[in-house]
Amino acid sequence: MVDGLRTTFTNKQHSVTISRELPTVMIGERINPTGRKKVLAAFQAGDFEIVKTDARAQVEAGARVLDVNAGVPGGDEVDLLPKVVQQVLSVVDIPLCIDTANPDALEAVLKIYEGKPLINSVNGEEKSLDTVLPLAKEYGAAVIGLCMDDNGIPASPEGRLAVAEKIIQRTTRLGIAIEDIVIDPLAMSLGADTKAGRVTLGATKLIAEEFGVNMTLGASNISFGLPDRKMLNAGFLILAIQAGVTCPITNPLVSEIRTAILSADLALGRDDYAARWIKNYRSAKKA
Amino acid sequence: MVDGLRTTFTNKQHSVTISRELPTVMIGERINPTGRKKVLAAFQAGDFEIVKTDARAQVEAGARVLDVNAGVPGGDEVDLLPKVVQQVLSVVDIPLCIDTANPDALEAVLKIYEGKPLINSVNGEEKSLDTVLPLAKEYGAAVIGLCMDDNGIPASPEGRLAVAEKIIQRTTRLGIAIEDIVIDPLAMSLGADTKAGRVTLGATKLIAEEFGVNMTLGASNISFGLPDRKMLNAGFLILAIQAGVTCPITNPLVSEIRTAILSADLALGRDDYAARWIKNYRSAKKA
Image (cartoon, chains in turn orange, blue):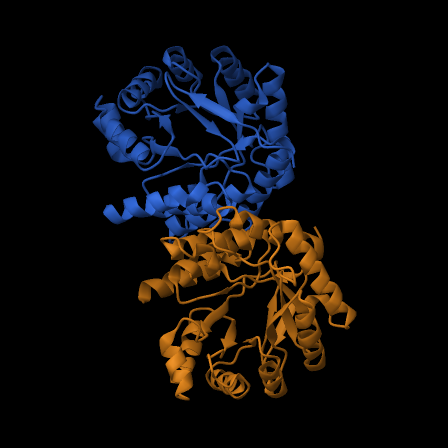
């Protein structure tokens, strides 16, 4: 296995480094109107109080990067996304993950963002590579690469490794450092196919071993259509971290998720003196 | 990685097969007076009702093998252990794991046991190898091999692999099939040394890859001296299963443990149609 790479994101004043030798970094997923009617309605009304509350709460719960998505149906993302980013940064002082499928909205944020954000995301489709990577290069951002391309999402670990390789080649060819690529092997629903977890975990392991890149995952897809979702997501995240995921996109407000990630870090020797484990236990007792 | 081996234990009428392609088998740990004053007092008084209750409850909660230990300080284990085994088998019809450091007590049970039990345990010490292995051979039992020898418990994964190799060599040289050896890489307290988990998981992976043997683990040691033990044990078990543990010795009555094991099985593609996951959820809702 190659050595694990170190990826650093920054905002104006602070940085977060991600590496398999360091504690897992939670990227908070909550600032996203998808499936959250209250957030959607607030965005449409130009009300950002809920965004600020969500930002503060996630950071207090241990998120060290926040994903920011403003994809409102019929909304003007080019106008809205930079506003949401500014609102978030007015209350929390951590690096952001800019989550949009709209290249104009992405560039509007990159123009105002002070520091080095994470772009969510590029994928192996030609159109995506041609649009997103030059922006990442121009603004010095890191970028999440999704393991799918013009043929869809490969059904095998080896197929996803091949897409990761293609994204890494295209990115580094532009002069972006391999450290600045974070691969997402994609988690699919175990409810639809009980072999889906094995494919995702197998891909994670292959990609981590081959390239040493940092890896992310939106683990909650895995439990779609199944009961007891929190516990399943938590268990899957533990496996994903062992396989090579270093910065999952998740909900830090769910105690099962937070505790699962901390247990994996402690068991894998990434929590010196069990300090974070004990701190989480004490905070939970107080709450 | 070599293919995973299949190990089968039996009692008079039934068998349980353990393999990394099949769901994880929980070996119930509760029939053990160590640290359980009520059980200790009952054993001393010749009262086995608590044993029967524990046996039934563990099997109802999903244990498919039961560990049986009758190590009472000052007690006559040679007399007591066969009695406890008979009491257990009078209420549950599954294979047993005979847990004793006393070779006479072990032989007393092997003489009356109908089927192929699991012996807990042999280790790499010369005295242990010379005493336990001939009994396993004579009575056709499978045997747990602990990764420690006359020099103690090795501090590195490679050291534990070497002890496993020694036990496997000595066992197979006697004509016992390698399938009938179940290796325990030993879990030490993360409270004492936060690198302990990494050593155990590393050893598990090395041994599983090198020999393909089934592996067990008493995961609860890992959390000794730390808070929130159930969640830490649960998280560690998930990692251990991914690394190669196929039949942990654990407490199936703890829902966090049971759910963690089921989440790992589902995520690793060992729970077709998520049937066991859904069944556990429904039982928990009813309870």
